[in-house]
Length: 150
Image (cartoon, rainbow, N blue to C red):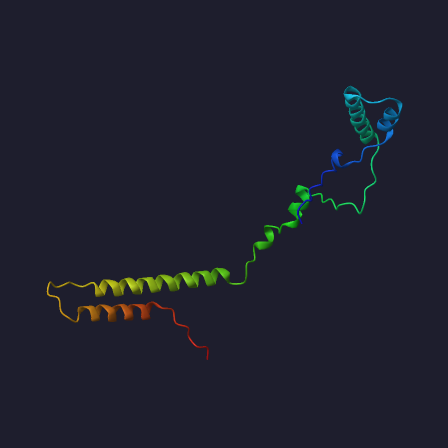
């Protein structure tokens, strides 16, 4: 799993204002515009100072915080030494496939060289059919055929 990003705390906008300064000031005198501005400023300052000193208890269970270090990530990867034995006879199988491909390629080149003989100027009506027949035989010879197991 990937490391978890911590969620930001709720902003102070969602916090409910306290009744301390606003109600006591309103009951002493009739507020005018300047006094209302001072009261709002005092409320803001009280919110800020209270939020710095007190921590609200967390609701619900705490988020699972993952700590990923380079050592832990390196331990999760497979070792390079373990990949030495990639299967018994893998090199021999690879060499066998390469030899078969080289033999097939040389057969195809020989057949193409043989079929590309001298071209005459006189065109016959059977030329297209001969070309298609040569192509079909070439494809049938180059296809790998599965030998049924006996």
